[in-house]
Image (cartoon, rainbow, N blue to C red; front, side, top):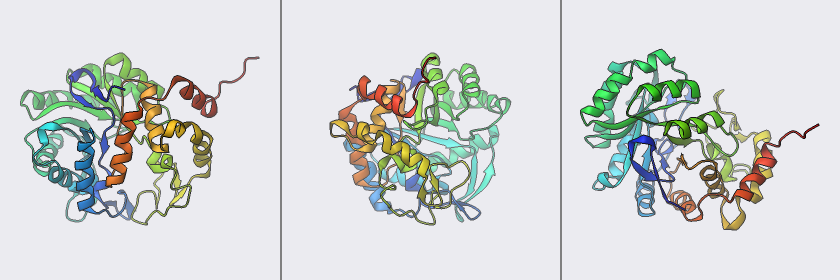
Amino acid sequence: MTQTRTLGRSGIEVSAAGFGCWAIGGPFWAGEQPLGWGRVDDDESVRAVRHAVELGMTFFDTASVYGAGHSERLLGRALGGIRDDVVIASKFGETFDEDTRQTRGVDASPAYMRSCLDGVLRRLGTDHLDLYQLHVNHLPLDQALDLIEPLEDLVAAGRIRAYGWSTDHADRAEAFAAAGPHCTAVQFDQSVLRDNAAMVALCESADLGGINRGPLAMGLLSGKYQAGAAIGADDVRGRTPDWLTYFDDGVASPEWARRVDAIRDVLTSGGRTMSQGALAWLWARSPRMVPIPGIRTVAQAAENAGALAFGPMAAAEFDQIESLLRPTPESP
């Protein structure tokens, strides 16, 4: 397969699979609700980032709020000396306290967008960001459009190369992209289990990169949680918020687990692991898709980068999965 993708109309080239950096941020909270993926070994995370680069991954997606800034600090440490060889994306809109690791609510104002970037660049140890993304899924469109001019100013100043929006609302994303000359990507929940057809169509019609968050369904598509792998109390999946449907307080949802079991054999055909099969489905779905599986160990980096060698799922396999998960009603 082509192991790189062009990130929409920016011309920025990235690896076809990126490195999701939510988990390497470690714990952070909204009150007593955990928002991270539990405790992590920072040294192992640094090794994972560097190994991913060695294996051809060049795209790293983080956010200012992940670990209350810790994900960006760790990523800056890992990429020191090779910054110009990679593409880094981060996000703004969620405020936080770095000392307590508590989130402090949403601020999508132009003023916060600018001040947040100062912190992002400082923590990453770089003078520019490749992709800066609005991190407020449900923000009203009029407030999002107020950000276009100041974001364009940041592009003109060389502080960012392009920008986008992390949202699952295709209508808002379409209007945002139409108004922003340097809007080049949308990030949305997309996996073999949950297809956002409207967002995929938008990426193809508007020349946008489609960054797929949740490509492994919060780890469900790895298969290990159905087998009984433990989830800690400081993990977002261990005390599930309303928006997280794949798990119920640390246990894989029986409904979603049944769907995974139904497609297991197709995902793992040809020697792929389940995770590699899930990424292969996304590449077969559209050449615009750039999945960003969460990675925090060297082994996970090797497995997800290894999917690049398999490439997109064959058309017959793709159709088989569609018939298993989304059967077409029979004609009368």
